Length: 510
Image 1 (cartoon, rainbow, N blue to C red):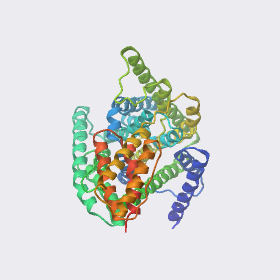
Image 2 (cartoon, helix red, strand yellow):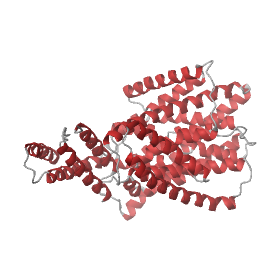
Image 3 (cartoon, rainbow, N blue to C red):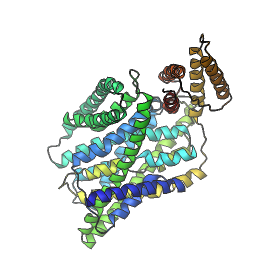
Image 4 (tube, rainbow, N blue to C red):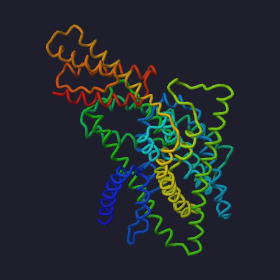
């Protein structure tokens, strides 16, 4: 009963912290991190224990699926170079750099444990950064680079993490690890795509909201568990599954299912963040209490050095890459995937470098270390210090930094929304051709006015309550999907109009 009461109190506290974060314009994960630190220092707080395998599945699978579902393949293709540089090189440099620092601090620490520590703190979480960035509307390209990094760097970091944990347990061979790494990656992509293809008909047939939401969560955890049972990467499998599921065209989810489903997933993501910050906080108290004063000082000093290394390595790599790209553009000219994209700038590079806040994945990976793992206590303490430090230092200073940097507002989504609205409204009017009923005439006038407003830069949202409206909404959905498939609009514009059509469809139900 005590644990249940603690959970209720923590969830209530999270709601209050989220409200405070919105009021002061700060990212809510930063305040959750401070809340987790406060929980760690509370006397009498219970210590909750979860199995390592359960922690990764419980905390990472749904959060990754949610991020993958909202990702844009077009934007990933457009920005594959900077995203790859962050996902592969930045993660590798951070892992190696932190491992070297840990070995210098604690020479007795085995290399596998040091590498595991590096992999734990390597992947940034873009949630905090994007919360702030969307308030000030920076270049669209920066948002897409950070979203792509956040989605894919978990896979690279956790694969290294798995290898390091396996090496610490013995039986590791670098000769066998490289081809196994490639096989796992390819197999995970294939299985994720096949599972999405198999799940699409099932999810499309569900008409009951509670059943649909339950099946969504069961299938998410089922995909992760199946991937782990097959010896594949649960992270890569979930990411591919989510991306493929989001782009399904046969049997799309009905609006009355999608709207509550999105609300449930958003709430669950917040709850998981709260529990992750709290769980790691509850581990820190006993860790510090069990150390001698000399060991406690050494561990805290080491955690601070790891935090500094994480921040410095990211800044050094991102600014080096950004300088190289700008020099290349100066010498050979700027080549962008789309004319609407903003060219790389020093200010933009600094923003990306400073958006290195760690979060959910770092906490979950640290909690998932098995009992008896070398230097497990220090790794968990360092992981919490890195998450807390980056969220507070970088998360709370990001908005002031953005206020003084010259960043253009390219906002291609606004332009794409205008294109998509005009195309879908034309499709609606075309669907009404030949229908001389009074209802059709009323709709023609309403949609004609909306099209005129759209062409003039306005934003018209229609309301409806009859079958005729539902018919034209269906046509507009097909037009919108075609626009995305042809690459004329991105996923941000697609999701924005999809939400509008969802509410329109719901208002048109009898």
